[in-house]
Length: 429
Image 1 (cartoon, rainbow, N blue to C red):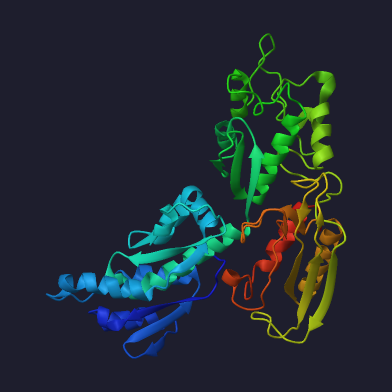
Image 2: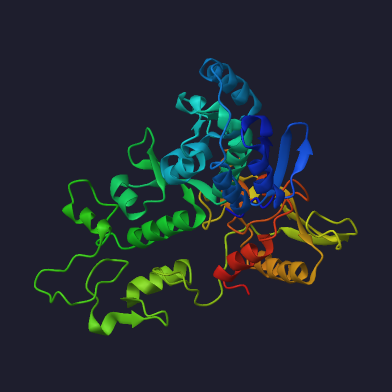
């Protein structure tokens, strides 16, 4: 994982019987010696390779080893600092990122969230993640490594997560269609809370909007007794038609010859379905390729103020800093927002870019994105859990100059290329 690029592990030479072999392995990693311990810094890939080499070095054993294990485990757990995380984000990770969690903890650690099982009606509450080593002897080498890998997974997931509420009659059919989304029924049987990546949430909303405007063909808004709801799992050939007839990915019906429209990305749709889709967003409903200029739902009347500082940021020590101040005032939601007529809470945000040629290039792209109302939207904040508030859209910003990716800051050498890719998806390049 490349999100955190510089981490450290501590290796106690007292744990090893063959110290000469240990020193030989460590020599190429330029370790810092502190008493009986070696402090080694590097990337995930480098330290993964080192840990693999260390597994071949014979460890010390003693008659009291097994007696000390429980006490050592207790001391080791106390030294692995717990991580406070959002209850909503952690619930999503535990259900939708099980493979990532398994890869991180491996066979030597357990990642536990005991408070997550406690009922809580406040989605903005936090829970503690405890990283516990199964074997005390492995703690000095891997505990901080595992903790930092988990933080990276959490930060990546949280930065791309959105929570929304939709009205549907059959969320199980939608779950099959959108496997990366987490659906949670509410007390209202037709209302479901959905958590997932921005792109998947947008796909869900687009799908529901298209079907709401075509109730005859809708696979999700019909009652439970309507057997056509099974069409959410894929297109079905109509009776009396040739099986080779192409089906529209939106309405699932065979496309008539005179109604067929094929985009330059080679995906075909019914003319009426495509018009409705493009009225909502000018992108291919299948692959997301942009057709025209994309305009977002960022509230009007905001300001984007840019200034510069001579101070540098980690990773850009030779350069100054570009400071972007966003201000979106509070107001009344319009038809393009989740709750038209209701008020929304405004926001002030500060973001930072390095004052390099690439940083200045990204700044100009962000200006265009702001003018096209793509930087913010109105919805539910993933950090506070509040509804009807201005939140970041899916163009990520650095809101701190230091602290690395886990604190939305620098150093993060891949950030500028990532945000450029996010802007390109929206047709800004």
